[in-house]
Length: 370
Ligand SMILES: *Cc1c(COP(=O)(O)O)cnc(C)c1O
Image (cartoon, rainbow, N blue to C red; front, side, top):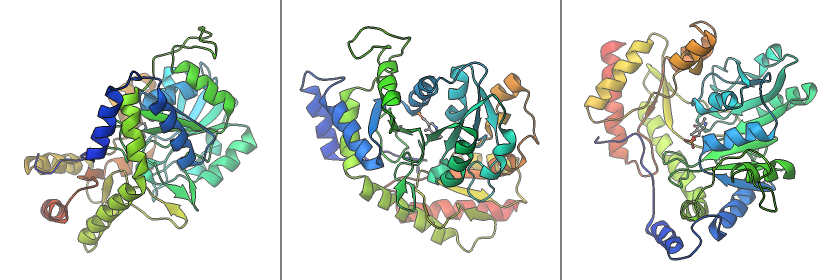
């Protein structure tokens, strides 16, 4: 690929930090884990943070920690990365999808209440593409009906509403550090919460179900993250403001290059809502169909430009169709958006001349097919 979809940004200092850990006896459950957790909680503004081996692992142990299981329903969005719905299935609970807002691509808070039943236990909110979901409204609904709120903030590190960071709006939240995220630890994730009992339980579940005395008190997992990864996380977090600024600048260059073009729209902006740039997604206008999107992905790949399918609707994946009998038309807004959104190459160090090349090929395709 000439222009990859994403690329991690690792400094010499970060490489040194990782090597530094290798020279100590503490490769796991050591001081770097403690430091990463403490600094991360402080950054988000929550009391507790528990590092885990991935965002998906964090979502799984949160489902368990809140006692969500067989017979329970969890309200969530069908327009997301598949892990946010899968984690509900891990504990035999049922995902109940609610269609999305056509502007923000996040769950449509107006449509949540009509899906609440006596079995509803929680709302799992996803801040899609780093745009905060409508947390004030969602929290009001949850309070009225006595529901747990969990944020999947895996795409939204650093995003916020009126200065308060996502991850601090709910009962508990999860972040992820795969290499395409705002900060990376290779693989990794973080659970944050203000509830001591949830933090304690996540610490137990990620470490084989150990209690504070070390004996095995419940069925647990190995979802630990090594101190090698945590050292990278500490160093990446230390320069997060500059990384987020770079990403915002790259997004601005894209926006400027594409502003006069009618065939597509950039991601929305919302007053008081600060997006953290995760991917650069565009939405093709309505005359384009799903087959155009995939034709374009193939054609751009042939030109050495790697784009991504962000997202296909979860309910229409073969797995969910087979398991639940979902069909086209079940969530029309999510389908309409999913058919027309794709991610362009995006990372901290993307150059203006690369952006110009991507946009040129993109516009060429749209002119020919629109
Ligand atoms: C990245 C991501 C996750 C978790 O990813 P892992 O690869 O398990 O770390 C979960 N939900 C969403 C919405 C994501 O984008």
